[in-house]
Length: 193
Image 1 (tube, helix red, strand yellow):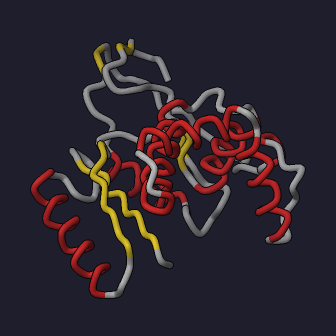
Image 2 (cartoon, rainbow, N blue to C red):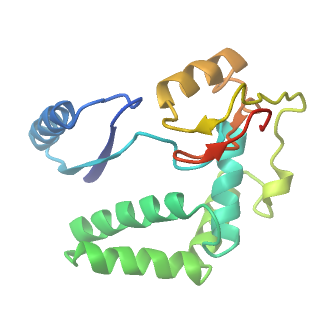
């Protein structure tokens, strides 16, 4: 690699809980990358909740295929993060502004070129380039968890989600995953999923 961008998700429930810790880690990555002769940028992002509500290898792959095959419809947080990251990389490589890079990336998703490129990559790696979200198999066994009382979702803990995913067998079991039915700040009533 010649150009490297590293994202450090930070916040409550993220691997790096504090902004100070993220800044220290970012400086370490920059020093190390520079010593290796890499052009490196490190970004710090909000990691206090998941980008998508479907978590686990197959479910996350479905989210990406849904996003790209629909020219950017749905999964807005994932689209935003991908375009921001692409904007930074295009800034590093082409010398354009991050905003211009973001716009180019967004346009490539919205006009379908990103999906065409993804299909080419899938085919080059021996996969089915006619993949659809529905063709990506997910686990057949499922259960729902219901709210024990009324309230508001104050936090979605990424660390706790990671523990549950591992208990379910992910990432080794590609079909294992979790579908979150609530978002941070959402009101929920007793008995709701």
